[in-house]
Image (cartoon, rainbow, N blue to C red; front, side, top):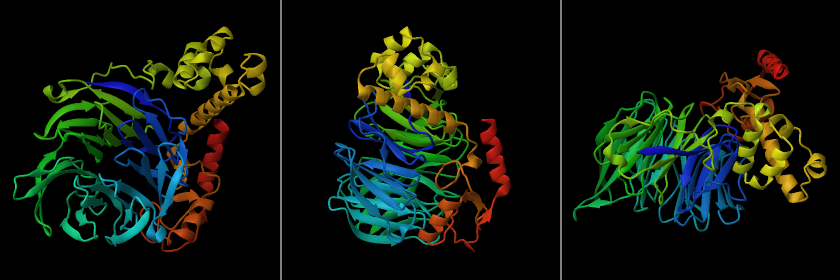
Length: 486
């Protein structure tokens, strides 16, 4: 069976991707940050969150040894981070400065590929962080990429709907046109190589806006001759499928969808095993742990769910996870009721649970003795912590106040209507303007975009017919009214 182990709630905007290494889980978000968790207890590492990108972070991936993490962003960069210190190792600027939508590391960690909104690809030598070569597919956006298990080729998927196989010389080995009607959203190679001594075969899963998850066989007859054959079309989800991932042994396949579900399949036999229903919005990301029976799923509800696969899970076809399964926080304590409340409505017990989750369990007794509930928590200051709660450690006081400020920010951001947020910065707009693509943006953000992004639309990637910006007075008044009422 499959059970919900915990729910991670650190991000303040849509979760766009999750990735496991042997010991860590990385998640990235529209809030411009990455968060890093230890997988033994899902506590955040000391250097988390990682803040270095200027705009939304779309994708992240670990090197095979787990020592490095790569992430890409609308800010047109791919950043390489040390997973020992959390420091930036390198910033790779995409050729043409177009927003980078996808990045992938080869299994041998020799190469990194980044794909952008203008259809360009960049192949980097990962050890030296130097650009090797570039390629492109015109009039589309690169949104999916995966290296083969042999590290000698990679597949890309685009909003045009095609899947393309490339070698390390950036030569196209095969193009599968119209693989997904309305566009590909994700693709991933299975980790195993199949061979009968004469030909070599790989498995690939892809998903798209057509609400389908497909499994393909890619057969290599010679260095230049490849054939791609559709093996299975999986239809368990009723809306666009946004993400897919294989387990480390290639036996299982997981996918996430706009219909808010997570599906787990027997990949070999294309049989539905489980359909999970715990996210409140679109499921945008999914990943298997390579060393533990765990799955991470990320969503536009700003959470990451961690699921445990129990022994024998493949023996129960098509079952849905019971709704009464307890929603848990990152330390395993039940918190479903508290999550639905404003912080100001928290009870003393809710505050105690929150302290434990944030690694501040040593303060529980002090808080209980002083009857600290949600309202009191939000009003804490350095002075009250020192004089009334007698917390002597300056570092502990600072950590607590930092966590309280995050709570306040989360409370402010969580209720903002999406149309009030700038599509570029994902922040509440102060001076909304309408661009030639018909979308509204924060003036400073879109002006900066136009000056550096070759005058393409951030939303459609099509050329802006004019750079004229018109103040959106109606939207500005609506935002003002909303701020007054909140």
